[in-house]
Length: 329
Image 1 (cartoon, rainbow, N blue to C red):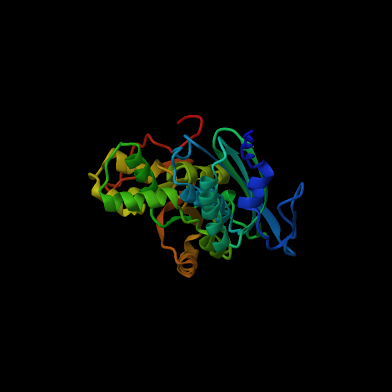
Image 2 (image 1 turned 45 degrees about the vertical axis):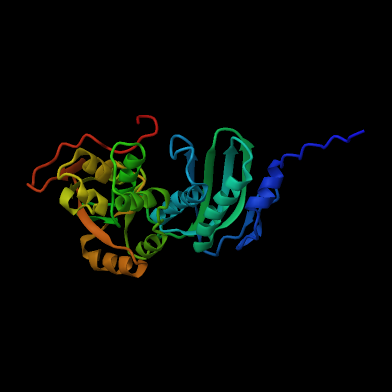
């Protein structure tokens, strides 16, 4: 009589956590494997805590490369700590998975941990469940009273941005067929979309200055700068020509609606937008040089509420786009 072969057992939730997401955790009394992690905060420091969720079909395409997705899942959270001038220390990761795909999980965890290792971040807990693909990280870092905040801008401050803007949004437009880029431009823009570089070093350097208000640019320059203005009860003028555009935007027609939308409202740049006193401009440039990041002065904080964009002719532009909103877009 022929014996029936048993179907191989599906790995359990705890098997997946053990195989793909359990590693020794630094700066941690107790990490993955218990009901909660136990963390040891450095003397005199406060915890900076932020959570971000990435949902398939909303934040990324369902067939996204899992290695790059692992990178971005952590990068967007590191960007929040960069905007606070906080040093990243720990993270938790919650995953909803439609199925157990061990090849996908291996690539995703490798992308996640490659970036975690660069910033000395320890994964100390999380959860897994079955459901539509959903990725949620809570990031924890250390800071002190010099933490960067959105409510610290004052009238007369310079407005700065790091890096350049619009490349990620242009990459998304290429992916969705709104525009077709040449191979070189597409590769550059898709790298900006899928592998954003969190400006942690710049945030830490800016936190050494006497007063800086900051935010990371995730939903578009106008929307995110608007959050600083709202929290600080001030207004602003920025000069369109001063906003640093990704090189691929230069190939579009001057005055292109798509180019302006990507530049001002495209989102996914994960650069820093920040405000500092005029007299601290040399210190800002020194901080940026120490962090190895270019920064650009794009405008000035004013007393009249609202955000105005000034064109090359010195006249205020009528801007319809204001950035990404999860419930309006």
